[in-house]
Amino acid sequence: MTGEAVMGWDLGGAHVKAALVSAGLVRRVWQRPCPLWQDLGALPQTVADLTQTAGSPGIHAITMTGELADVFADRAQGVRALLDMFGSAVSARRCVVYAHPARFLAPRGALRWPLAVASMNWSATAAWVAHRLPDALLLDVGSTTTDLVPLAAGAMTASGVTDGERLASEELVYTGVVRTPVMAMAARIPFDGAWHAPMAEHFATSADIYRLTHELPPGADQLPSADGAGKSRRESARRLARMLGRDFEMASMIAWEQCARFVADAQLWSLQQACERVLSRSAMPPRAPIVGAGVGRFLAKKLARRLLRPYRDFSRLVPSRGADAHWTASCAPAVAVALLAYSSMRRKASARVGR
Image 1: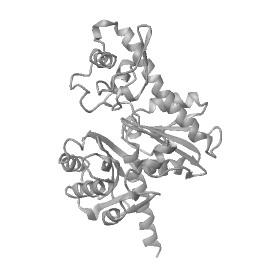
Image 2: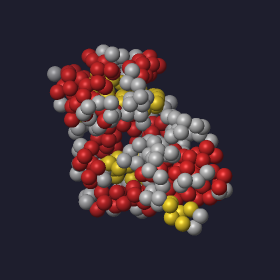
Image 3: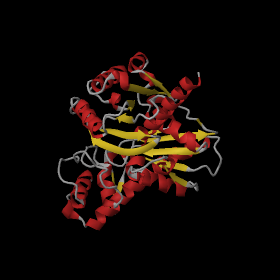
Image 4: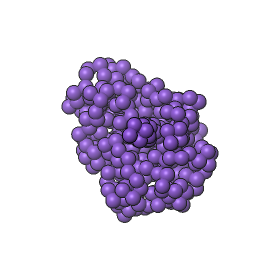
């Protein structure tokens, strides 16, 4: 049993992320677009395809956030639907589901206690990081959200657990580097000598902003653009111009890049304020590092400099062989839940041998 491969899964509302672990090492990592609000039926096929690509591992460890998709009436229904769809591709006997804090349930147990598993991917990542760095602030900046998890003396010291609690404490900030509407990133934008409130329309997203600042990582934007058009810098600038009631041709590319830099800085400032608040109530030492994860962890690196703390990339904490470091950090919850499940499997096997 200890030699079996483990596949870790993070079932999100927009993407499925997966990581393969064998012999305690991360071997491969994947991210696939899978917008649940558009096509629930795509999830079983995505799971089946990735499972086959991975060589049909023996154990599957699941964490999730997709139960929040608005196609579900509530989180309990979402958890049940995700596990049912996953179970149509992989036998439930081979599955475990991550539950806060740092334990695993059989799918049947997860259905009995859905709130213990709903949107707990942040907890899986933090539980793994705490094994490697007892004192740190984990910043997982994703395509849609940012998780801030303080760690002190090897334990998670977050003041919230549920999404509602974490939103109130700013340990969950609904902002990311791909899918966030520009109207949610800055209340006003300077242009042509005046302040302009961006239109309350889904005309442009943070992916457009970071394309214009030259910071969007390759492969980060896997879903259609806001208008369904292309993803060149010119097309991103055209979408941003529309947010201000303008056409692209009304200003130079330099002007639109300046607007993008302002919006990006406004987002960074909102995250810095959340970090300052979380750190102000934490017992971690002053030089405890910022651990950056997620496709937008380039923002975590900037925040580490602003907060005068060292920076550690999640990928540097992970034992791996052959896995791409960028995607290892970008898909941190899938990687973490696989490693945690592998460690749990080894402990159980050792306990049986010791009897």
